[in-house]
Length: 85
Image (cartoon, rainbow, N blue to C red):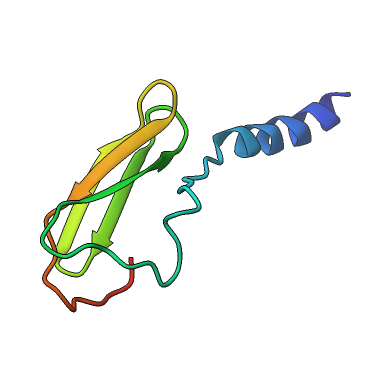
């Protein structure tokens, strides 16, 4: 029994600690962002989890609230700017 507990506890802890940052379906590959306006990004993660976003020359870090929701804004982009987030 102890042997099983020694194995099970770390596995269950690792599963519990694995948090997945999720984005809504509207934020996906090949999306088009409006030029000249702040870019709003949002999603869910584990409560208190840090979320970092890097796009072009911008980097933003936020923390998920108690409900796991987070929201971040990028500065307005130039027309024709292309990049990977």
